[in-house]
Length: 602
Image 1 (cartoon, rainbow, N blue to C red):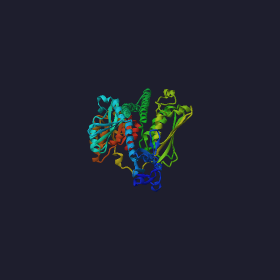
Image 2: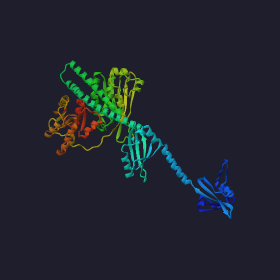
Image 3: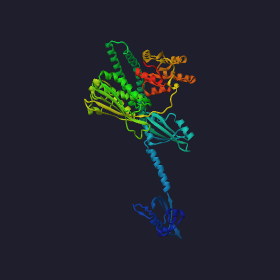
Image 4: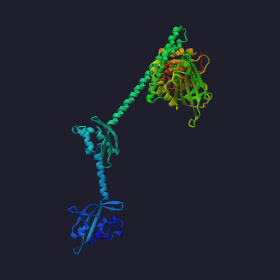
């Protein structure tokens, strides 16, 4: 409240006015009009000072709202102007100001919130406790209209269990989020929130039709990938099982008395079967690359023996072509390391096999060197492998596309030498998994050198193994139990083992294997994984459970046509010591059994 004289100068002000203006002494004697700057509009588009008007006319005036600035602060005021009388004479004015700033700001906040709800692109609706709708924004009205719910009822756009959702929200005072509801080809996700003590619930809708379509597409793709994985695993097993019989029998036949014509036919059969097996392996590995499931294992390995195994596998082909096959391993390369022996062997076999395939005269050389140690290779070493040939070589253009899928040097290469063009792409993936890189140097008509690096771990120091860990030892010829339901596989495994000097007994399924082990002792068991009545996984679990009471442990080696990591992990989880994938070879079977037994050699 302000009191002014006839000229409008401030004579006094109450404490609230003092608080408003903030400087009492400075405003006394100051014109109210100059302090507040308030003007009263008139009908002729002009304005006058309300204090002056009151003193002149004696009328009470009201200025509903006017802005006043004090420093950096802005106020919105409502002011009433009353004449101040003495003995009927107007001697000044009484001015009552009300600060509307907070109230108007709050009102504007409410209006902003209301506009936010009304202008929101997603539906918003509020419900009373009895389920009746008390408010719906424009987007909700549009949704009701677009879905044709004006005719069928607005509940069509809301979850069918709306009443239960509202009751739970009000009872628990907790929101219910992400209730999906499909209507008219659209999917709306509703979220419900109780409104304090108002016994009301506000619901927010979100159109997630596109998200649901994407999710369904993702689920369909994942299901397709699962089906593809199952198909590949099944095809792997189904292809490898007959391949085991073909390759096993051809290897056994070559050690029998044959005419030269018969021997040539058998060798042709074996080369064809090996080529087919290579195609199967490449396609399965490529599917793993596409799915991002090509992984590595870590196990102890003898590097020189691993290289020798590869050289042995390709030596006959090199001999037939009259090629000199040389191996050079630097003296400082450790004999024992840790890595993935299967993938290391696959890498070297692919590159050496390619070198022999594309070389008609001259030599193929394999070299392994230890690279300088790096600071971040603690407990590991970096090896550089090189495979050099004197073969047909490649142009620079051919080298650029060499590591791509389905790529060979040119189309005539595929016609002349065969192959899928997947092998080098898979090699590159394997090298990258081993934290290395692979390069090629070649000149057309003058040979090729593939070089790659691998990071391998140094061996772990372990205490010496006791006899129980290495399998049962006894005098005489070791006995091997083979469990396989396939007659051809039985013959191949039996002949291979007999050729290696072992005694062999064969059963049809896992249950028979368990029964045989209950009444006789064996030095090792070869268990096929897929058998009727009781498969190899269950048989291994039963055998290991029984051994907890007897205190013995027989080595169990899985025989399987499945090559996926999941299948290998499943074998190990069942208690099997190692896994041999079909088709079997005499060399690999011998190496596997030598790990567990001190068996005879032919």
